[in-house]
Image 1: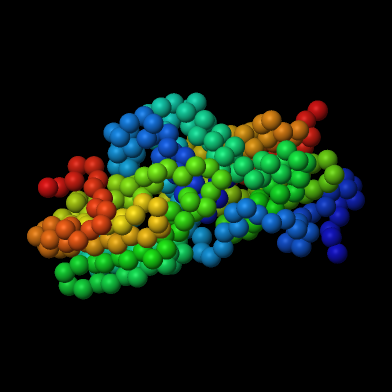
Image 2: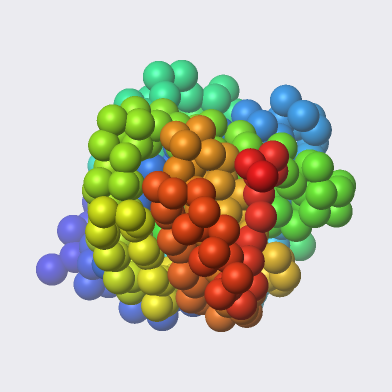
Amino acid sequence: MKPILLENLYIKVNKNNLDQKLRYNDGGNVHMDFHGATNTTIEFIINKYGIDTMNDIFKKVGNDVYKDIKDHIKNGNIKMLAKHWQHFFDRENADYNISINDEEIILTVNRCTAYEHVRKLVGNVSPNFCDQTIKTNEALAEDTPYEIKTEILGEAACRQTIRKRA
Amino acid sequence: MIPSDHFTRFYNEVFKFLEDQGEEHLEAYWLEISKNQEKHTLELFKEKGLKGMYEYWDHIRIEENCDMDLKLDDEKLELRMNVCPSLSKVLDNDAEPMKRYCDHCAGWIGPLIDKVDHHLVYDVIDRNKPQCVVKIFKDKEKAIEEEKNAKLLMGWPKKKK
């Protein structure tokens, strides 16, 4: 039975209630050290070319790499993004939950294992590490009827909300 | 978060930007990645030589889901990548693949192997196919001899002559 929070009529997403077929549906082992390479890359690009260049690259990731998710958002199917979140946060063993209703989907990340892994690997996480989420989300929502808001709640924690633009 | 599963597609976007800036920009980035990789490989390679390299790539083989054969003998380590997951993902991509995506691998491994006084022969074979053969020799002359057999030999920044 779906756990329903009666006070706000959200449905908590679980493995069984998001029936979407992902464009990139990775399986097998997970190589978390790639997050360390992402951190190195962010530092390298910002130091050498500036933050606008880094943001432009994230924009390309949102628009081009994730074109399929963006197309679904354009067509009103925001559940595809929720499925993407669910699949990859599960694979990376993050502490998170997703709540969904007819108007919006909220992803709350209580413990981001990507952030924690980088902290363990290199000590200092780039202050721009979470821009990969913020800027890619912005690009995903650009030119669609939806907006995606990313709020950083603290170290390794955030809330991402997709809802129809006002 | 860009999932670790999708890092290579992010990498591909970074390469395309740097290639537009010029070759030296790409090489500077490969060297930065190489420096980053030194943190968990340099000591291992220095201390254990070919055996340490075998240990590292055997771990990568499993963790990155590579279809790869590894062969170690007294003179060399041979990595035969049958299906490279990195290039496979870049080719299976809604974004345009960078034409020279494979070059980054020799770009970061080469400088590292130079530092530990071993000799890398990197045969990409064909940049459009997710396969390659990497041989690392103790002896320089044997590496030079092996280079003659490569179909598409890769270089790297500041390659030792």
